[in-house]
Structures are given as structure tokens and as C-alpha cells.
Image (cartoon, rainbow, N blue to C red; front, side, top):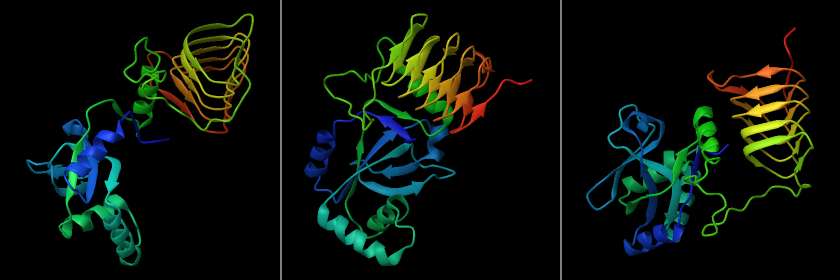
Length: 253
């Protein structure tokens, strides 16, 4: 999964890059100081010139985290890539390209992003970010007409809700089949919920199956995984349950 979820107007960052005649502009965002060691951290001067870059420092000097979004001036990028091709083995922007440009005195600028941004680099943060989409007025509105969201999802049949199904506050993708109860949950393409089954406060990834009579709560079910009939998985006040891909979870004897 991606490390971050964000919504950005790139034209503003590009205008900033051009105005400052930068060789490289890096989008940054302020993060809590106690989490700064998890990110690539930028130190900047009063004019937003990057003076230092540290990848996941144990003792960060700043709380400006790189978002991993870069705008390069093409001749500078080309020169940096050609030089890096023979100079390093890792060929990494954060580990090689950016530090080298700073050493060479290139003009590296920090563009401070103000807007929606979520770290989804851990399972708990991923779960919380997804659940926030179910709010009546979420901070990240996937139905916004101003900044459309496009996906590469395959074309599937419409989702189907059976005659005895109950659905309350849910995002349900194409190809899903719901015969039981779904509450405050997200169902990715082709997920299935059987007769009498209950899915609550959970995320079912593509092709996940919750069989008849099973109960799934506060959980993430991986792709193509199955929660067997009459199995009870997770609880509302318990830690998040995560089932990996291609797993069959059976009821304990």
C-alpha cells in the first residue's frame, strides 16, 4: 500500500518552483515532533532553502517531512541521474540524489504543503484513514467534483445487495455481493458477504469473502482471503485484526 494519502494542487508547487528559479523543489509538511524520526526530514533557512536532508534521523533537527513529491529542472535532473548511475549502487532520490545536489550547492527549495495529508505507513494509520472516508463530511471527499479521483480498477458488474441484506454507512465497490449485514465498513471490488454474516468497522480488500454466519469486526481482510462460515473475528474494543492475502480463517473447534 502507499505510504501516504493526500490531495494536492500541483500547479501551486510548480509556480513556487519557477518563481524561485529552483533546481529542485521538494514538497514538505509539518509532522508531530515525536513522529519525525519516521520520515525524511528537511532543515531550511528563512527563505525555505533546504540546508540539510536527513533520512529517518534518530534525533531530528526539524519536523518538516518530505512528502516524496519533487519538481526538478530537467537539465539538472539529467546531470544528477547520469552521475548517480556510476557513483552509487542504491540509486535512491532520498539517499543519493538529494544529498549530492545539496553538497554541490544546487538550489533546493522546500514547498510547505497546507492541506489534506495522512500518513498510512502503518496498519493502524491505514485503517483510521480509510474509516474517516465514511464520515458524512469527510476531510478527504472522494466524490468531490473539483478534484476528481480516477482509478485503474477493472470493470466489474454492479454490486449486489440481496433481499435480506442490511447496509449502513458503507463504501461498496463494483462486483461486491452482500447477502448479510454491513455496517461502517469498506468493501473493495468483488468482496462477498454471505447470508447472516456481519461485517462491522472493517475493510475487505479485493475478492475477500466472509462466509455465511461469520462475524467480522474491527478488522482488515486481505485480498482473496476467506473468513469461514460461523467464524467470529475481532471485536469492537479489541486491537485491530489483520488477515493477510490468500488466507482461510476457520472457526476454532
